[in-house]
Image (cartoon, rainbow, N blue to C red; front, side, top):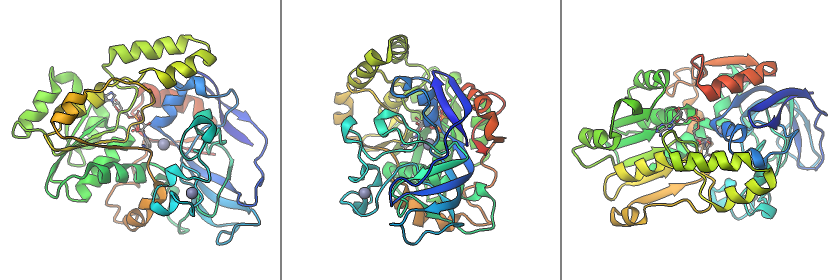
Length: 393
Ligand SMILES: NC(=O)c1ccc[n+]([C@@H]2O[C@H](COP(=O)([O-])OP(=O)(O)OC[C@H]3O[C@@H](n4cnc5c(N)ncnc54)[C@H](O)[C@@H]3O)[C@@H](O)[C@H]2O)c1
Ligand SMILES: [Zn+2]
Ligand SMILES: [Zn+2]
């Protein structure tokens, strides 16, 4: 089959690789019909490269049709239409039964000390072959699938794999009071959808920050007060000026470890990038190599007693944090990979023809899987209006 394969930093190719097959009685094989490229894939494309192996199949936002089901799986049949959550989880362990499938004790990657295995997400998360491919093997398929109705186009459902539950959790963790104000840093797919979810769920105001004009415009069209980072010398002051001098109730950081405007972290990432993988891996794991501009802005701007919700991914092990400010301002800080299945029942009823969250035209590009190399380039460089790219195998 054809698949998007990692070969090196900024080097992904569509290769022919062996077809996946059932290896464990709890597996299923799904024929992929649509698969997204995520901001998290860009971290693998760039700074997390040392954790990738040449030949790894990328992708964690797939949906399709069940092709084959292992003997231990009931409730799933060949021909079912399914979305595949980005994390592999069993559904019955201590963590899964507490709504934390990202920490699934059946699939935790204990050699690396990390949580649940993730599709297409490096050695850190189990090196599970990903879903940017014609077919994908789905372990723990009894829980690692979301059945969706036949009929509507894939765009209606594909974001259940990641974007929608991630945005939902970002908003949940942000704990915006009814009628309150939320700031969303980063208006990529995750920040944009978080803003939509927050407005839908009753936030009175959402202020967004980014530096890509078409991303700002897109958010403005959905009722976000969007600010261009480059047009404000002190963006925190601007935001305080818009919020009675106090700052917003809640802030979502939807930027993560590659934030623009973090010279120290940028240098560390560049140095790690020059080292052989065996040396770069411990450096990334033990040292502070995140670019922290967005996180520091979140802590600076949130009101006293407010909440910061980190949904952007971070990876350094000793990043400096302003503990005095965090403690003195009495800030609640919540974070983590999104627990996909936990939010599906809340989200599915919104995926109707009325389309309150605007999923039907959320994608800016639909491209054949064969164009993946080009798709990664334009998504990373923010060219050609690329905000969300879906690939069709
Ligand atoms: N926690 C999870 O489960 C989960 C799931 C999916 C994605 N993510 C993470 O969410 C983040 C966003 O993902 P995405 O798909 O939207 O990617 P993206 O890279 O398209 O979005 C990031 C946006 O942040 C903007 N930005 C950069 N520096 C900024 C700064 N200093 N201030 C404000 N904006 C800035 C960029 O212009 C871009 O629009 C990534 O870190 C990704 O890994 C986390
Ligand atoms: Zn993703
Ligand atoms: Zn589990």
